[in-house]
Amino acid sequence: MNFELYPLILPFGVLTLNFQKLPRSFYTRPTLRVAKDLLGKILVRKIGKTILAGKIVEVEAYLGSKDPASHAYRGQTKRNEVMFREGGHLYVYFTYGMHFCANVVTGREGIAEAVLVRGVEPLEGIGRMKKNRGLQSSEENLTNGPAKFCQAFDIGREQNGADLLGKEIFICDAKRTSRALICTSTRIGITNAQDRRWRFFIRENKWVSKSKK
DNA sequence: TAGTTGATCGTCT
DNA sequence: GACGATCAACTAA
Image: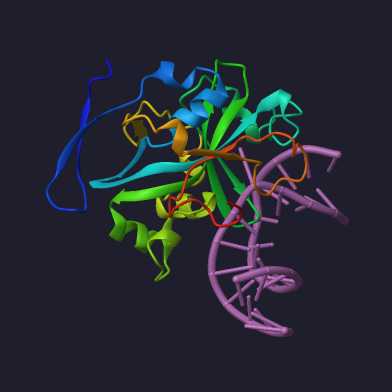
C-alpha cells in the first residue's frame, strides 16, 4: 500500500519528517486539478544513498489532444509515448540541444496529459544540487526553471518513463497549499494557445522562474 | 535592468 | 531544414 515512509533530514537541523508517497489515484484525476494540487508537494530523487528533495512551487499543464502547445497535440510519436501512459509516470524530453525538462504524466492510460515541473524549492541535498548544476550560484538559481531543476536533480534521458510510485523518483504528500497563495498565468515559452491560463505557481516564492510574474 | 544572442541536437515537417 | 515547454553570458544605457 502507500504507507512506505521516507525519513528526510532537512537542512535546518535534525528534524526528521515522515512523508507518504502519493498514490496512483492522485495522478489519474483531471490534469488541471492535479497541477494545482502538486503545488507544495515534496519531490524526492534518490541517487544511490543521496537524497534530493524539494517543494514544487511552479507547474504548467499540457492537455494533449485538446492543447495546440502540447507535444501530444498531433498524436503519438516515439518521443511523446510516455505521455500516453497511465498517470504517475515521468515524461522527460530533451530540448534546445542541451536541456531536459520533466513532466508528471496525468490521467488514464491513452490520455496524453501531463504537468511540467517549472520550479522547486530545495529542501534536502542542496550541496549535491549545487554540484549537479556546476555553477556557483545563489540558492534560488538552483531550481527556478524547468531545465535548471532537471540539472540540479540529475534528471535526464534515463529517467524518461520512470514510475513515480517507484524508488528512484517519487512525490510525497504535504499540506495542501492554500488557494489564496496559488497564482495563475499563461504558459511560458509557447506562442500559441495564449488563451489558456494553465501555469500555476505559489505567490512570492523565490523559486518561481523569473520570466513572468 | 532590459534586451539580445550563442550554444547545440533531437524531432518532426 | 527549421525550430524548440531554455539558460547564461553578453551588451547597452
